[in-house]
Image (cartoon, rainbow, N blue to C red):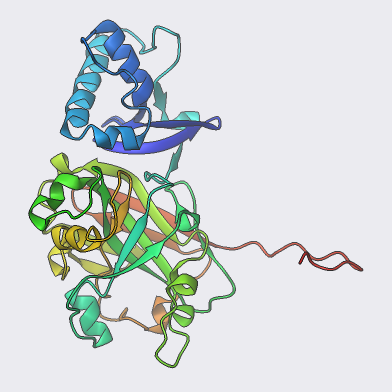
Length: 334
């Protein structure tokens, strides 16, 4: 089950991609399903967005399977799925569907640093005693139909592949043993940053300038519910740039796993549906070690990331458009 955000003719939809590469608007499809299969007390608007889906937990996954079975039954009868109102809920990719990042933009984004044995080894750093976390904001997000954007302020852009977990249930002071009950599913994250800005010298680390620029974190192409992924350790991971492998390994390389991370963060922060936990980078394959100049990205590069049981995310890299010139005889705004 591939949960997605997408647009068609500027209209936003939350839904899923079928095995035949069709897009279902789950909100409209759910209303149609309950119109034909009324259930006392059922909420036909429960799929109005991804947060509402997550709040339903395993029930949302079970209901979605019933909806897809309902659609297939009616298709077999020669019926084109349309709601009673006449609103469509089934779309084809060739109609101009644009995939967005499958995350809630009001959600919080937590990124793990120094969280794989191979990445620590290539940096010659000791293993941290607790999860080491920084944050990102929605301005840095791009989806599968967009590009990572290079800003000329940074001279050493680099990219890393990470497994990301999506929070599904609200909670604080969550015990590690209960943590996976608060996770809805998994997606792929590409964490782009600027090494020169992240490490400006004299032992300083600047996460905001190094990792916080616009369009520097790609997420997608969908969220796979945890029920369909199963145990996320191990899952094979591979990152290619222009067809050349830069990272290859699996999630067993992670130092801190999801239960420990959730327990650590929730000691002081309320985790909410839609929050994203990006678990950190693996080390580079030989020849693409941390800090190696060959890791530097350039406009025109094509990034291909894959994680076992989740999927494949392909994102191009482009240069940021130059700012408009200041008109002669005028001053820039204060």
